[in-house]
Image 1 (cartoon, helix red, strand yellow):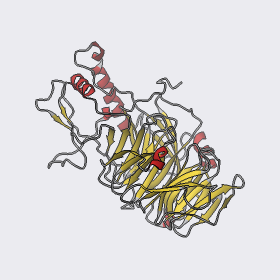
Image 2 (tube, one colour):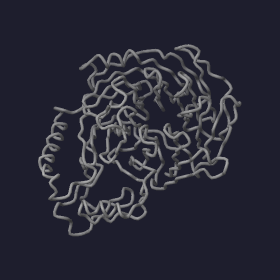
Image 3 (cartoon, helix red, strand yellow):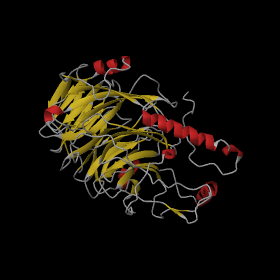
Image 4 (cartoon, helix red, strand yellow):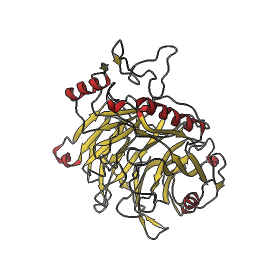
Length: 473
């Protein structure tokens, strides 16, 4: 179980590194290139990791003051599928301030998120298609310089609503994105209407610039007190306003909406776990079914029509199950991440047969802090860990020696990749300290946002290919 920010200090903007600086020479290396493995290989004295911008279509960093343990991307009306730069994104996040009274819910808009489409594989030297490589490189440098100087960099507009206590987790309602539920370390789950602030950001171009945001005092629409604090919370994607929340005392409560601003919370909790409930996910296809995971190492499947006991329960990991994600494109697939760093993928159709695990990875050596399936590719998911790595996986990939040979021929490199690296590991992002949560943007294919003790990153890896139309139609 790993949840709290290690050092609740003011986040400061830093230039972080995510990849080693020495790239391949066009003349070809004299010695075979070695893949540097985070957490395995050590840096020699005087060496440092440098970010390679060519690995990303877009990469930006920002912070809103105090670090945020949890955030959510707010669904907007700017377009269901957006592929052209620059992008605009709306967020809500909860702070982890040094004093309880200093906390707030941040509602913010990031505009002018710039980027550039890049080739995942370098062009072959001498190929006519590569004649513009030099000019493209110059354009890339100019774009990067402009971002650094702020001329074309993203703009952050921020509003804050006072919140008593640290925000353990925050989620926006899918059907009504201006409504959010926030778990507080005081034991309260509170529902907020943030429409005034979101509308204000949508109408404003300059108000609320970073560092100048006023803190608004506002009462929540509704609140419910658990017997202890918690982290597990999820809105139903099928029934507007239906909510479940789970706490550290093993209890899960069902919230049913009685109006647009009131809820009936069943005082009799769902009981089945023997330790803290860490995460909850509603089924993407069945309105009465949700899943939960726990410090007791198990995952439980619940049907709210069948009473307060789980319909099914099974041991999922040998340690705490910290996080889980139910695949919304392939509803039989459930992913989970553990305190021991392992990731498991289950096919729920195989539960009755005993072994439902279809994939299991032991790449990370520290606790998994967040896991989420891609909303655009059924086989892809992103994972964050306490080892300061954000990894992207594609379960459809398998080792292909012919494809590897073709890649080496194109790059003119002999890359000695470690044999124990899973072929499904698609991308490794570094540069953030104490990663806590990530989310894919459901309306911008390939965009991932992550939060850590030193702020947020917006990233779009260049090798994430989407089957969606490239013209954004």
